[in-house]
Length: 266
Image (cartoon, rainbow, N blue to C red; front, side, top):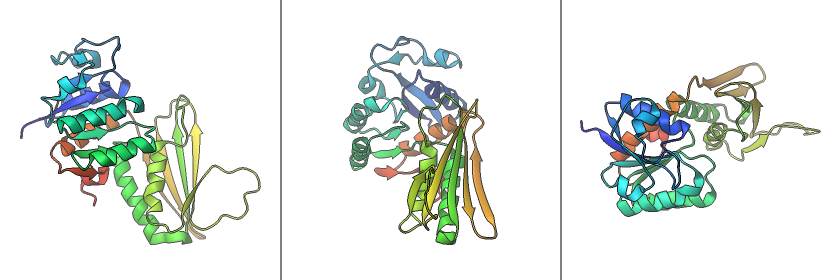
């Protein structure tokens, strides 16, 4: 099968370098273009050398439109500020798009949805295969257990993470809210909160040391407790998932897709 050529935006960042490594190790994929912002100090350097995998003969450029012409899919792991123009370029070139940015605004999400009328597109805050499976499991558990069980999400990350709760915790909460009528999220608790109402999902964040990423969902009944969780060991798992997603979207039909589609969980 012909390998999928990826135009990677945000190639010089930590995640970008991991994706280059993952794509190099995946026989179904290859880095066809490496893109960074105007003024990036590593423009013109070989993306493979920068990522530590050796020369790929792919030089970092700020010209996405020019670089992506010969690629099969655009994979964006840059910053939200650049996303609107990246989406516009993908639609103009009629190139499938995978967006992995965090902090997407409502306006960006709307633009992604509109782009899906023209190209295959997928946006996810987390490309972990395990998290996609966990999301499907907690959605099913919430549908079965309903409001007879109290639901709490506990997430742990390193002390350098600047946002809370994590995007992954919100993904898990959103998956369960699909199965809970009149459900709502509460982010931590303080003071006289009153009795816990049915349908509430508590979300709590721990920050400390070098914890890479841990998420546990608790379903708590009167006589038992069910725990479903995921532990991330390295950033490589997200990169591997991103490459797998890019290969899927490059061959997908026009429309908006999800990680469940990528894994065939639907």
